[in-house]
Structure formats: structure tokens, C-alpha cells
Image 1 (cartoon, rainbow, N blue to C red):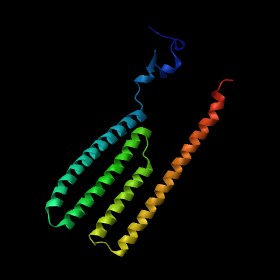
Image 2 (cartoon, rainbow, N blue to C red; image 1 turned 45 degrees about the vertical axis):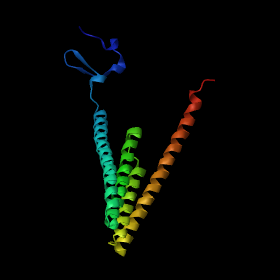
Image 3 (spheres, rainbow, N blue to C red; image 1 turned 90 degrees about the vertical axis):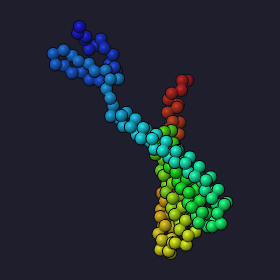
Image 4 (cartoon, helix red, strand yellow; image 1 turned 30 degrees about the vertical axis):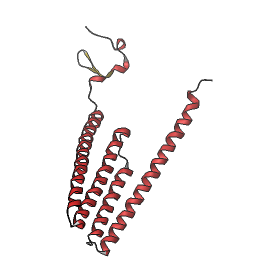
Length: 182
């Protein structure tokens, strides 16, 4: 049974191929590469978030087990360094998980959370090496320069995000008078 093109709704078909008989392909049967990409990214980020959550939970359990060793052992300094290192590592994992969670809300990675994780990681390294007295002046200068760059990057990301937010609000206010009925 042949159909005329005018019998079919215009928005339900992607394109028309004519060989001997017209062939119509419904839009909802076509796989969009963008949808496949978005689903793959959501799946990958979901798995990453699951592993980070498991890592944070295992880290907290490990911290409680280390507290028992800290109390019973006479060499507090060695265990204290490990305890501080693990706590700061958990902070880095939490910042990374915040970045992944924001991806599910906004469908984009926020640079502020990634910069926060980098800043926490560099501060972690500085604090551990300072506590162990294993850092030279050159390393302190280099890590300080890295912290300055990460801080500037984070500040710029916040300013750009606020500017985008203001432009979005301003554009929505401009559109509202046209949509209102008198």
C-alpha cells in the first residue's frame, strides 16, 4: 500500500528515499550519535562516581582502624603522618566526586571543582612534605607557583560562571515581555 507524502506528518520522518517506492524512516528509530555519546559519558561518570564513593567509604573505615593503632602505639609521629595523609587524600576524592555529581546536574564539568581538587592535592603534598621535613626551598617555590596558577584559574572560572549566569538571566528577562499577553 503506497502512501502519499502529504498523508504523513512532516515531523515524524527524518528523510525520504525513493527507489521504486518511497521509503520513510521514522525519526524515533534513528540513533543519534550525540545521545549515544551522552549515555556513554553518563555511564562512565556513574562508574567513576561509584568507585570514588567506595574508595571514600573504605578510606573512612581505614581511618577508624588507624585511630586504634594511633592510641595503642608509642610512636605517634609516624602514624600521625599517615593519618593526615589519608585524611587529605579523602578530601581530594570528595572534591572529585563533587565534580562528577555536578556533571549529572548540569551536564558539564565545572572547572571550579576540578581546580579545588588540584589545590587540595597540592596543599596535601606541601603539608606532608613539610611535616616530614623532606621539602626543599625550590620545591616550595614551585608548588607555590602552581598554587597561584590554580587559584587564578579557579577565580577566573568562578567569574566566567557568574557572567554566564547573569547573561542567561538577562536573556530570559528580555524574552518575557514578548511572551506576555496584554
